[in-house]
Image 1 (cartoon, rainbow, N blue to C red):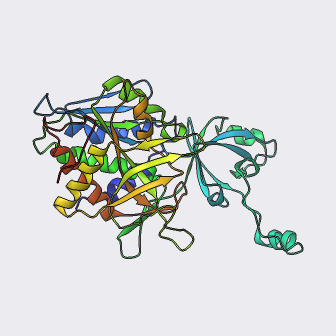
Image 2: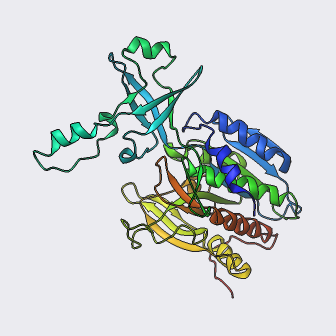
Image 3: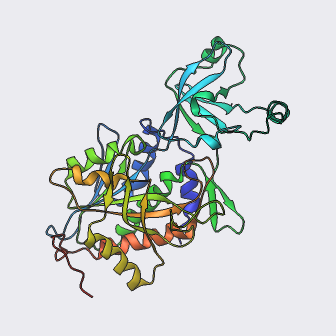
Length: 373
């Protein structure tokens, strides 16, 4: 098995707040370059690597993994020296209190910490009413960089608009099957993308493959749509994380997948408040399932509400691009301590590589479609 742990450490240690992905762009270019025929970066920062197939009549495939991470920006520096933040994506508000962070300035990262009311103050202020502590929204939280004035903060080089990331290292848990760290959404799947292209470089495959490291997914799926519009693939395969309900405070009726249960094939996902999401093309969905079954690769399926990925924008490109999603389950999404199983990354890679290998010139995405056994 590939040492995904080392690759994860490298990817997750590289800052890449949505819209500020440049360091990840450089890293991804360097990682993909040995395995592809061409690599370029567009004006939105999307990394597009092309690996030519052996048969021009086979469908072209775009495999996407977004490279940005959900986090924050410096919004306001108070005269007292404390800093207010604005979200850039959706950081986990409940996980911010006392969390160490890095503010990425033009002269380098500055360490800070989100403030939290000390225990003695908390007991004093809340035992009287008996009311449980509530999670403050981001507007009411603040960052402490150890300064006593706005001037002192500015002397550190901190400016409004500087990106902020969690200060969190990737580490192994327990027996070593699982890892914990920040930005597994979506660097874990960037690792899968890199390893997939490495393995495809050693085998014959008919389809030309575009490996896409897309930007600004956390800001409304922006980068992937532009890349699809430019490259016009015949199918779009989105790699992302999915939410699990395998912890004591969750319910499988909502998110019926487990960490360690294998890669997840998404049938449909949607956010109903804006009626936006993806229903997988039936041929692509069945192709993933049939490949997994034939090779005895463990897999899970899901149909969920409340989370979408870049595949949700594929139908808007041109006359519409058939899409599917392959995901890895994680716990504690968008927090500084996301948890995944390393074997899920390996099995996701195996399933993706074998699925691409099996797309040839006879592979049709025409509708109506009927599965044949």
